[in-house]
Image (cartoon, rainbow, N blue to C red; front, side):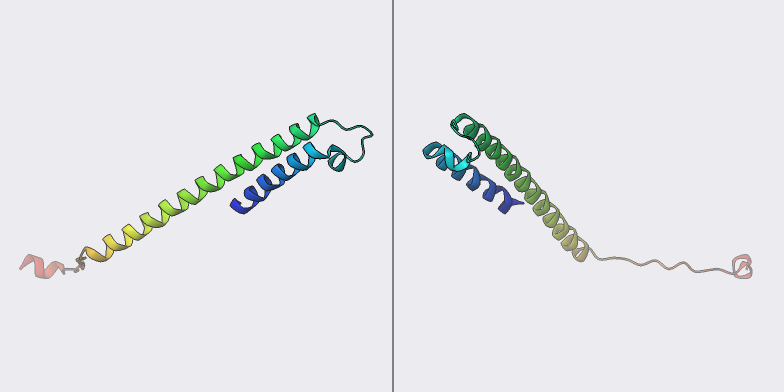
Length: 97
């Protein structure tokens, strides 16, 4: 998702630059295109790309936290010795004697 957001940001900047120089190249179906729709469209793409980038970095951060917690749990489990207790069934006769 991080790569998609970067691609979307590059696309927004490209559309903005080309649209400011030659608006007819972006809005080719209009007879006399203005620059305002290009600015609005590229700003919407830019905001979407920034939101995607933030979500991707948040997801990456939570994954890294989870991995470090798993590593800590594994090291704690291997460092602490375990004691096994077996249940022994005692006969009633041996208890009464």
